[in-house]
Amino acid sequence: MAQQNPSSSNPDDHHEAPKGDPWHAFGYMVSGVFVYGLGGWALDRWLGTTFLVAVGILLGAGFGLYMTWSRFNRPSAN
Image (cartoon, rainbow, N blue to C red; front, side, top):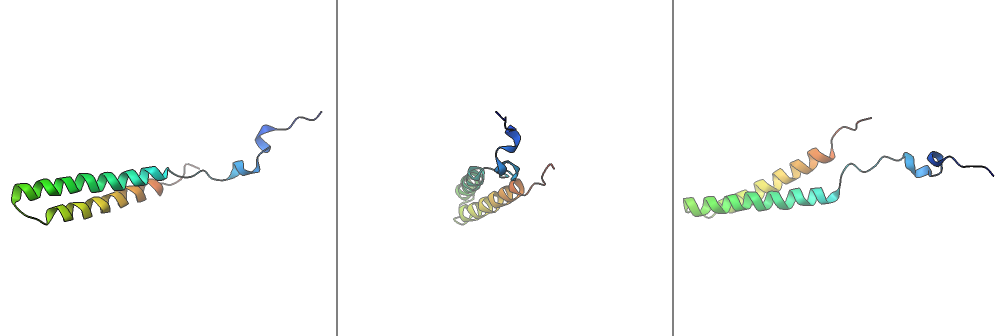
């Protein structure tokens, strides 16, 4: 009986693994919007304005996109 080499048994082993978990992207977006929106809301309450919550939400979404982009575009260790 011939024995098979386990490293060559699956031809799909040579494909590159995904760079990250999509839940990380979701978490960055949600947490960015939540934290910066909360900060904008607190500043609105403190300063008596009504527009900083929207600015905070937009900044949080932008920072969430940046964090997602920077995490998923790291150079590979090859």
